[in-house]
Image (cartoon, rainbow, N blue to C red; front, side):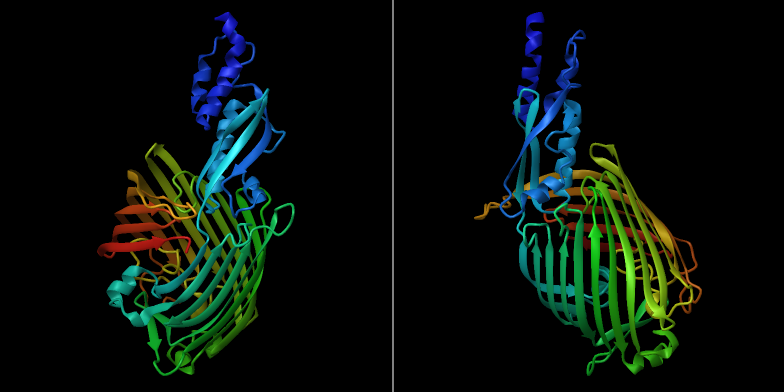
Length: 478
């Protein structure tokens, strides 16, 4: 046996090359106790990093997400973690179907690395069809799936447009809303790959408008002969990403909103002081932090978001707004996890026109079980807890296309239990009972996770009003 000791390092390196992911590293613990330096503790220097499979994505974009550099030295156990961190971070760019980070070869104590990626399809010229209501249940049940409450048209989504993980968005929308919008997001604009930029522009008009909230439900006015609302919104921001997980943004914007006099007659507080037009600049700061296994559906790790916004500079519109979001997920077993998410917000001063009082039930800020309601106010938040377990994990094979970008459609199916608790303060509640009240809900559900970050949620919820029902939610990168 003693003659074989000098061959241990070579045997270990051969194992690493064979499995690519260092799966045999556990066998190193069986080394004889008198080995002078345990191979798992020895330092190996990072040599060349080879990247394959990236026909569109530029090498620096991939290297930016890898937490090792040529010349760094790590033990084998540290390299295992670094390889997994690199794979996870590259998957979270949403640029690739799959990523493999592995040892490629060894030159003495120098280790070369192979990064193999399988790119997604990035260009999507698509027809556009989307109900305007806040969720599918509201459109299907309350609005009877009315086609008059649908936006339709065309959209161009161009992800990774120049190979720099940039995004171009062009929307031409008709139907419920006549709208033109254009957006561009480039993660990096400097050689050091820390600074980026975003730009968004939208203009449009509506024949129908939510002008008030009564009994915690939106009240609309529709005019078939003319448009009751017109708007223009533009934003430009500068972003900063020093390391991997955190991105800072500071931006400026300009908004113009105009409504018909009928809206002001129905709700004089829609804008301040009975105005029918509002124009204001704004400045904002936004910070996002992600350290999770998979951003669209995190089962492990932490995420946070902080947003501070100042809208308006005079009495016609004076709003300070602070929003905080947080999420933590922990594996309880290889197939189950516990997730806690929280939201808190405040708007000051507390006396605001209706235009500035939307709080819960809009966008992704809502409580399960209250999908048919909106809760207006100026301060509050919620806490959500979810226990989920993976029941199915399979893939459906499809014929390969010419680019070979996707020959399998993966599916993961989770069953879950969840509970919500929340509160919204509204100093002017009007004819609404859910604000200034501690709210609770709970339920069971199924989540389906598939490719291109599409998440389908089927949830059966119970709220404290004695109501229950099945609710549908869809979340995707589109």
